[in-house]
Image (tube, rainbow, N blue to C red; front, side):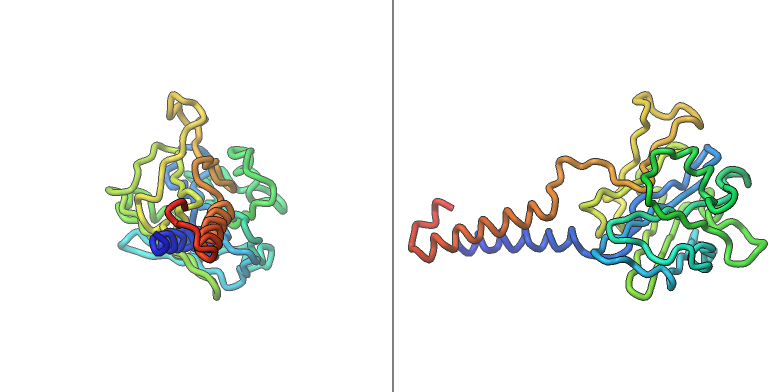
Length: 253
């Protein structure tokens, strides 16, 4: 019984370790769009310290061709770091058909925020442009593609998502795919992703209906917080260790 208990506690602690593994992670994808805001990718810093973006590289591929994405805010020093437990939105600055998300002045994401007004303040926005101008907008590589490959890396972190559209969840236009917080470390698996729900319960209703939560996780009340799991495991093991020390029958644990 005691060995079984230790095994159980070890599994819980291992699971907690998986939940809290640090790094940059791709957590939401909007790749099929009808609205003017265009495509976007959400990236989350799952670490306890800010992630330096000066060495950030992002590559898109559709299986036939690849393109390194030019990140003007990173190159200019406007976006220098992603704070811990914070989100970055990599977005198509021209929207679909060359219209949409280009804002004016110091806020290139102005039109994005018109389409996604609930995006939390503090979300970091970075444009996705072709490495060489003129060039094909990077997100266009994914149009009609059966395989979508997205990789990101810095000097300290990396993440890769490889989407086979035949096995991943299907979406309607303006409906994102998201990965739940407790599955961040399995975001390379199709089973870790789900389609966002439309605000209108009737489902897709045209371009004015969008499903996604850029800059935020969906609420997952059924998933215990890592701290709660850790507290439970430690208290359980400590209680039974005290009972073992005092030679109390462990069958009551």
